[in-house]
Length: 159
Image 1 (cartoon, one colour):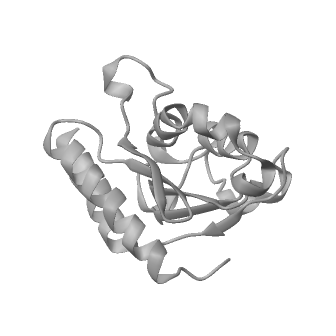
Image 2 (spheres, rainbow, N blue to C red):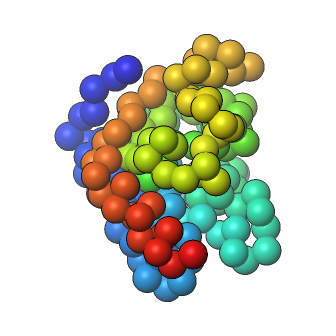
């Protein structure tokens, strides 16, 4: 596992603000941010409550940045970092890998939440990382983890 940078903490703080705002407005308190160098390409939250069960925060930002991502070279994609307030599920992790993103930073771990936020029962990103079809990802778990855990707790109270 890679240690977080100061930039990782700043970007995660932005994602956490987005997640808190979504939660305050009745949505799920999970958000994602896609960064290229110092440019935020997309920042949004989970939109599953709008009728698309695949609209996890990571998928939403990937869709928002799709045209930019399609125009990028592999070298440029290697400079991308995806930040998410919760350890990505298997669907999102596969999509992240497929797009060519090589670095994922996340706040709360799946084990911090209930079973409905787990990748799959008892499986973590670390366990499947080496098996990704597009190669392993650089993982930076637990950045501002206590804030991520607080969001999961607040979501449980709303449910």
